Amino acid sequence: MVSIIILSYNRSDLLKECLSSIYNNVKNNFEVIVVDNASSDDSIEVVKKNFKKVKLIQNNENAGFAKGCNIGAKNATGEYLLFLNSDAELENDPLPALLKTFDENKDAGIVGGLLLNHDNTLQRSFGNFYFIKNIFILLFRGEKGELERYKSSITLKTDWVSGGFMMVNKEVFQSVGGFNESYFMYIEDMDLCYRVKKIGKCVYVNPHAKVKHLGQGSSNKTFAIVHIFEGLQIFYKQQRSIYEYYVVKCMLAIKGIASLLIGVLTFNKYLIRTYIGALKTL
Image (cartoon, rainbow, N blue to C red):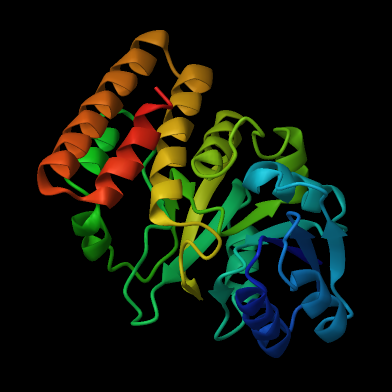
């Protein structure tokens, strides 16, 4: 059985659409666990009224993504855990493709699929670990070109897949201690994949498993950038060398100062607000 774990925070409209798409499309044996991170809207009422089969867990505080997902996993009974963002919508059943990847690849510890915009263009949902070279590309060149080059129709090994659409063997998940709760949100998925690969398991992306994804359903771009800055520092401090850690801090500082300066010169309040917050994490 597959346990579908959804973390929700203050977007009852998106959660309702997500749950409806699951029950309308998934045919495999599954359970749904919704972990609510102390929402102040009507998320709890929406679930209780419309989705009585859902196993609902109510946190007393916003515990963040990593901790919230771990709470869901501890209450799961399935052999496989599918972590799915509340702002995702299924248009068909992705479980057979994901499970087939596990069946055909005994070394698989984690399998992800594709996150699509509503116009079917690709979002960033897999890739190489953010080592020094890739962080430089991410910070100063962007990643659009890499996504456009991905045209494969076959399942491939990759370094990491997005926690917004990620299936994990529960035994493997437990063996590495689940998501690292040092992260509040962002980069925790790459950290998990990194630790899974360190124990000899592989990470795959299956392009036949797809979901539509709104993106930043319960956050915003400023929030994302600040926590990515913070998350990259946590990853390098805990998983890489001290030399690499300080190189990354310098790169983040350059990116943050340059973006803040552009914001000041162009009177761009978004850039000013975002990169003041990002620089405070350094």
